[in-house]
Image (tube, rainbow, N blue to C red; front, top):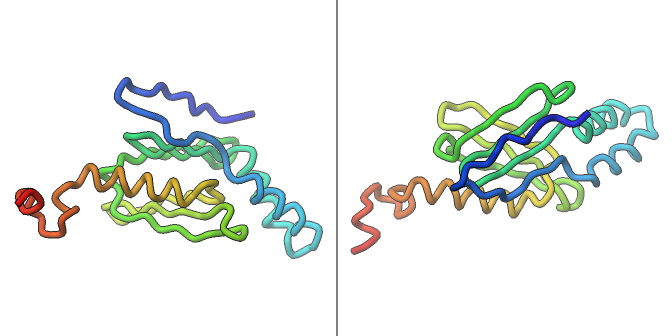
Length: 144
């Protein structure tokens, strides 16, 4: 059973990425599961493959996951303070953490094309905070 991520897009919203975690994460963890030590990682990878879904649009980032895909988190770009990522699987996929302005964190594990997604999210954050782009907080200084 796949979670419902069919929230309709608004007319001004464009879709950047919609899908599940990287397939390589599942394959790698299935192979690692052949050892007794790797079994918990394999179970986690199977649960991620079944129920974790990402949706990155021009207005927000949505993550649906948890048991049976019942947990849903949506974050507008204005709420994101920082994006952190780390490569996994020889750089083919990665884990991302969105640090929100209130200190909360949204984890995105086994994100495919994570470098492109990180660049896109950073672009969207910069587009919504033009005063911070020049570093001085004065929007007029950028045009002078």
